[in-house]
Length: 482
Image (tube, rainbow, N blue to C red; front, top):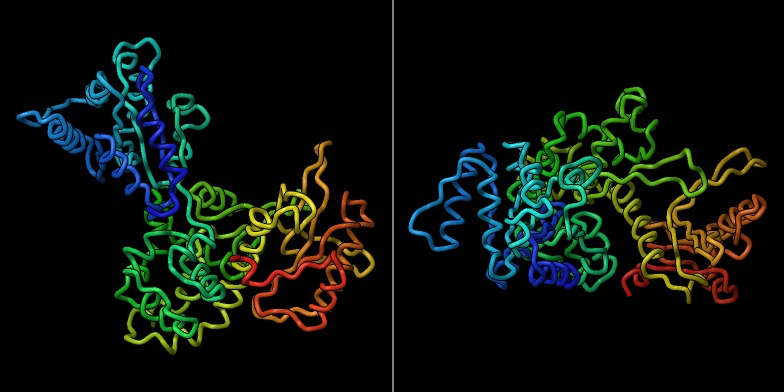
């Protein structure tokens, strides 16, 4: 197990809680994050029952869980259940003597076949019900369909207010991913992260522990793992959409994602890319957001402006690099030439935006008060109007603090460049934007730090200026990892 101490502790405390009364927990997260590994390990460590649902009819699922439950209690023959009321009561009976975890994995499959199941569990866990009060069963429902799991405990859902644990198993961030993949060179680690993100299974099961042996091996690694038609990673991005039950018209959603991957990050740009009206995309964007495939990020300076970002790096890589060449990739035995032709799209549409995202993440979670003068409370991107020049300026990183009066002073503004050596012109641009924000009366703008995130390094002049001016911070790729 790698870096799941928090999740393991939460599951352990929930599963071994000795207090009387059956309790419910919900575990969710995108596929390949290690949820099943955690839950199987929990059951092995505590003597719990693990049941993995399949896609099938309701009757078949009742038959399968009857067989699993009989094996668990060592009954001479499988139990026969006519409905889920009896199943849930049988699971509650397992905890009459001591706390015992009962895991139902891939819970959305069961609900797809029987939509009444959440209501049945709600009724089974009702207060003052003897089967519940006399039980110490710790029932854990798990699923990877993010849209479904997000609705399970929300709004007027039957199980709202019933859960004593709601655990999300996240992806690894860029630092943990580098450690997990065993990559010591920061630039190589960031390039790998821009393709496969922080999903643990992509190293173990999908790439079979094949990692770039050196910076010079990165291109060859991409060709033999991600771009090889015989590799599981080759089609994974397409399967991620197919796994979501709410994505009925996958062609439409692939087009929306392709528009974002092509550099269109607002609704109007995506609509123009697809040849549709902006209003037509509201539902599609909401569904993709509910599924966890995209994130909606508000402009920190303009409440009515929103940008969309693909949350899964492999999906971005697929749409920016692989999809335009899909037919050629499927039929070639050596993707070297195709990969070389894709370098511009990879750098501009994959690496560049990902580097900006990592810069914001690092600023929010790793750049402490010793660098920015205070703890970053909110970090995002923003657009600043320049009336005199009749234009606007994009800021890749904007950091705010939080003072005792609940005001959010501006701590820092920054620009991120992956493939361009940053110099004095980049710094002067940030100075000009800071002056505009000061003129607008933005709290803290006058003292805000000016941060250059340079993926290709910095000029000697800029290094000299940063050494003389405490307001100027230079953040290289090494800094993001150390």
